[in-house]
Amino acid sequence: MLDFPGKTLDFIKKHLKKQEQELDRNLKMVEEDDPVNSPALAESSEPGTDSYIADTHSKNQVIVSQLIRMKNNIRATLAKFRLGTYGKCEGCGKQIEKDRLLALPTAQNCLVCSNKPSKKKK
Image 1 (tube, helix red, strand yellow):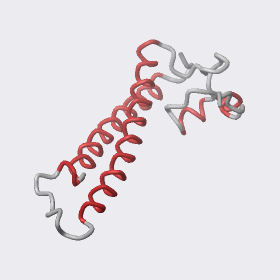
Image 2 (image 1 turned 120 degrees about the horizontal axis):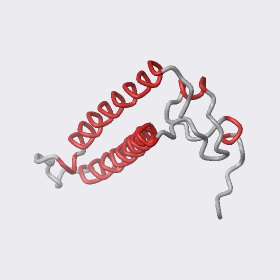
Image 3 (image 1 turned 90 degrees about the horizontal axis):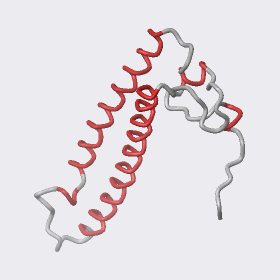
């Protein structure tokens, strides 16, 4: 684990938990705003209604997907706190720079590893 002062680690942890709660609220709000989930769907006989519903639903699904990905990153980071591995680079195993973690608490890699080209299969 990092050699941050305990207060700083507590601050980061509280900040992440607050972000997780905010993401939960946002997810609920986006899902409630999805016209597919609305009990009062507009008459489908109105011109353009079906395409509006489909377009809005598609946009909401993209937002939901992004919010879920962010929430999963926060959960994975909080799990690292519990495991005592928070701040360890997943690429090289060294400690992630403190300034980087303060700016981006969910960072998984140090600056050097994050700037390496990814080796994704095509």
